[in-house]
Image (cartoon, rainbow, N blue to C red; front, side):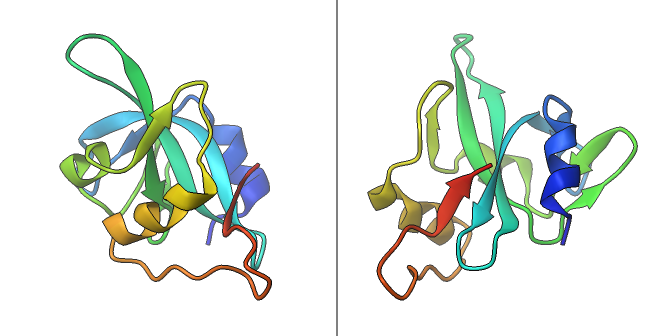
Length: 119
């Protein structure tokens, strides 16, 4: 996995899919509260009407290159992922949907605490 302190340095860099098609720009890193490891990033994407939003993309299988962050999921899947406004935040009740979109298991902490935290 990519160390959190390193991936945060890539804010604003391009995020691409396995075919190196640009998805958007890296906005923030979300860590798993169960292990404090980076597990998701938000990617700033724009719609046809120029409105930007932040979509969630998993870091599983991601590779940092000199030019961009290459994630293991296709551009369209990521662009269709759950999103928040550029000044919004991920609500606790929306976390399971982020994991489900990518077919990932979701479980809260032993006391029911949130799974993702923005760093």
